[in-house]
Amino acid sequence: MELGIPELRERMKLMAERSYDAVKSLPLHEVIGDIVDLQLDRSGISIFEIREEHVFSRTGIARGHHVFAQANSLAVAVINDEIALTATADIRFVRSVKLGEKCIAKAYVRSISGEKSKAKVEVFSYVGDEMVFQGHFVIYRSAGEPIIEGGN
Image (tube, rainbow, N blue to C red; front, side, top):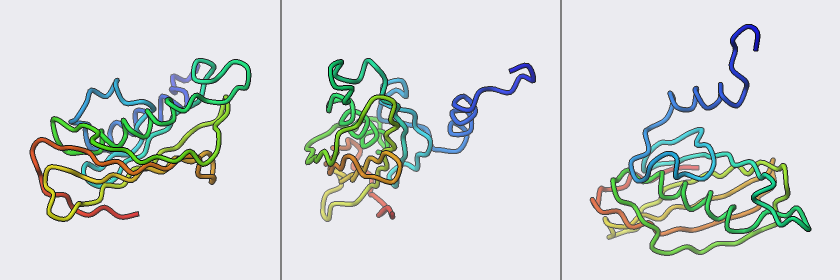
């Protein structure tokens, strides 16, 4: 701190802001978690640290809607459109997430053949190397822009 070097979290956030596309579909402050990589209509990554306010007090296990919210907001944020809304979500919680763990969500945009107004977004959330959540989202997009098939 004495040298004026920002803490690691702030440095990561600054670097991430410079290295990814700007979110168009919602204000950045409405994304749950910190986006560290975003390539519109291709892929995105966000990190969400589970804190006291995200867990059941008795068990220290994260409430599912927080883990879902991270994945859902990333699925919307990765869409290159002014208006992007979740049409459907098929989700699966693989294991519970605990207080202090960091969820890393990775989103991949897929095309839906014959559909220009919808995009399929797959989101996988991990704690370390272990998958804790997976979701398959269909996102409505107002502009009907063509989607370039994303890759893993």
